[in-house]
Length: 402
Ligand code: SF4
Ligand code: SF4
Image (cartoon, rainbow, N blue to C red):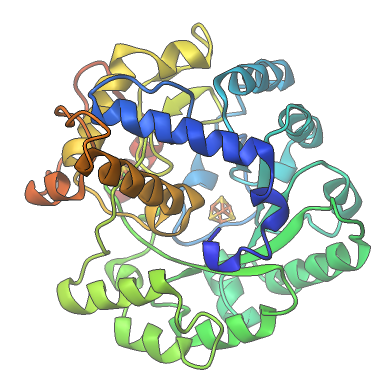
């Protein structure tokens, strides 16, 4: 979500719950500046409810994880209660393909019933089948990933012939079925790689005015990461080609994409943004493993051992959030586009202004400043110490590389 699409998202942004959660996020940032643990839970949580998937995308390894789902409906009901008590505002239900779970609408219902904004992330293959249930689910958004503008390019990336047409049919069926002010918004998102860059313009033009929002997410690799299935050529983004494709589209002057293009052109790297992993966001895998970041595979505990709050408030989590806040080795796209990065930066700016004006005490070590993070050299290796665990996903990736 980006503020330049305020009108699209007004029914999410103009709520008391949202404003309250911004105040809580600000208190978390303030605590971080003081080197203290967060005062509240994260602003947003991604729940990967399964890694089973009916697609075989080239850049993804989740579908290769053959373990069955570890958390049941009662676990998610308990989690919804804990999130509510901790002041979590947004929940992204992701996977794998979440619609493969038979209890997915009950899971969504537990979080929505407690006032959380729920975003269902789907590959769209089951959209047509479940269009009525999604419309009535209580979710605020459904985000459909599509990997190109044409069936030929899309199906090659997704590893499934006929998938483009099936998803497009599902979107049309959902949009024609949807009515009423409370049905979830529908967004389409393309993961941009070298393989589909030539189709960016057509993608934007064909979905603008059809979907409620169009998102472009450049493929990136943060070690360790899920998105390492592409070869080096597929991961390399051509900033000039992206810039050319954006011309004449509604995304032409998107500030994040402009900054991405500038940074890739100048340094070959993603732009630097402060990261709020473990402070404003968290991820939970299908077996209850808790991670500070949506991308990196360093687990700081499990909700199956004493619940989420125990992990969120643990010393292990606190060490990891401080490490990521002060000298993380990675840069990723999530901070750039996600609402969390957007508001986190604005909230930090208000904090820094208040500190400069003498209304706040000076920060102790552990705060997240851009200067401090940029000043440190990259640390290339995965983190394994201090009670942190590398997950099975990493093993999958390593096995794949042998
Ligand atoms: S990227 Fe998403 S849709 Fe594709 S295989 Fe992975 S989980 Fe499935
Ligand atoms: S920059 Fe932050 S959110 Fe992105 S991969 Fe690194 S720790 Fe995760």
